Figure (cartoon, rainbow, N blue to C red):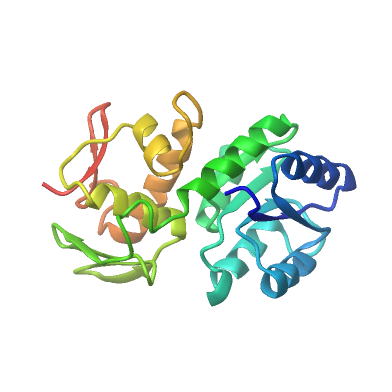
Length: 233
């Protein structure tokens, strides 16, 4: 998506400049913001295809900003890549729970930033991963990609765009087992050998917390030995 618009929200002018230069060289249009309110305002007023958001911001932090994006209808499906100085699993879990799609730890190589941005834009969830926006139903689990919702006998729950994309892909081929590496490629769009299995595990954990009666004994989103994950049969 050359020419796509990317919003970068970071209070560090050096990081804003680094991101801006790296992304501009690749042909992206870059919007810059120093804090969350400014970023949200630019996103609402000018629009963007992806947001790169620092976790530690003055006032509203990056997690809260992401939650606001997810609850604003016109921009709710914008992919979010978090930047952070802490490589902590607790922070990552909080970021994914807030609706983030991926996580990049500072300091980072600008080439890695570009690769992550390119992959998230290529993914364009949920449409690409489910063959369109049509609803799916497998083994008592119903998915509505347009509304980003999953429904079971226990009720309907709201999903993030990346959670919807992951479930939609698995539900498009019921019973088929996909490895974490395969999902990183098929859902996130990462080239083979890149991306982190922890990313897949974190999103699987969050989905189960939302749709499973007992996440410790999943009924819908299943693990298959050390092979990977499947939905149904």
